[in-house]
Image 1 (tube, rainbow, N blue to C red):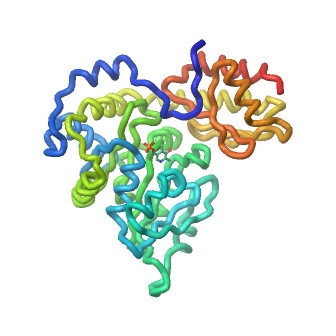
Image 2 (tube, rainbow, N blue to C red):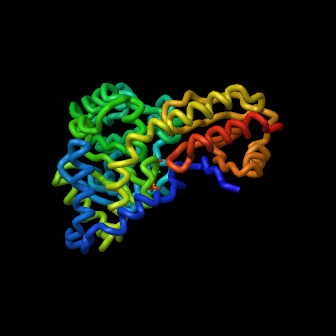
Image 3 (cartoon, helix red, strand yellow):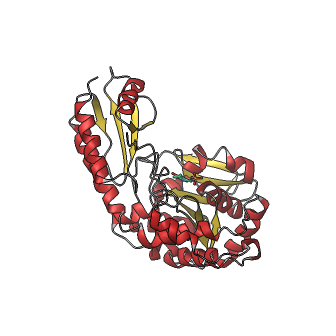
Length: 341
Ligand SMILES: *Cc1c(COP(=O)(O)O)cnc(C)c1O
């Protein structure tokens, strides 16, 4: 049986064309900054987002944590939503790497507002940490794929500029956000000091994230990456997958969003589903009816070859991606309709 894996958009395998492309790129020692393919990916990503420079890292956790380390110091504070990946799902990395404090906001489905940021800024008083960095997530993972539009980002950026705070973007799914908002990445550079762009989520590369920012910030980031043990050598073969993904896998994200809406439409009609969160991009989060056991539901799906994620009390998450075809979407809808609980 062909497994249909809806647990995350990280489960994709490189396509045959991507693999072919990876095999034939030139590589070199990137710690000497001599890997032409990594250099090309870094410049390509930076240029796309209207930034000066980029740094290729093994994971989005590393690009986020380096951005935080480079823009904070002990006794300072990071402001973010309480659902933020940098706070919830990076192993306590902010405390470990940066010894910085965190001010948690309670946004709407992972999204914060300029007013919330304003209210979180500390007065100049030695009792408080020094407000330093604001971090937002686009799309918001825990928020169920909600996205910020450029005007919303501009509002938060204005508060940061007025108060001399840096602004970081966790862009694990930034291309999903841009697709849904029908916007181009170029404008992001003027609002953010740093952006983490994941290549291994919706874009389908096997590994990697790129941190983009000013030349000065990226020079500092390169030093931190080295200290974390993230300086890689002939990793251009991996960077090639990222270049291929940026060239070929961005335009198709709209299909993932359409498949997510198909799943939502079916789920809304299922008696065993209590509610489905609005679907904005490629994430579908739904709540099972009170008498339905999550474990039993997931087991029934699994028996039909479908994998999904337990996402909290009676909550289930589906994420659509490159390896989830329209045929699989139809089959999944069929299975959902026929499940008896
Ligand atoms: C996946 C993800 C990351 C980075 O995860 P890695 O597995 O370290 O690449 C960062 N932020 C968000 C919102 C994510 O979903």
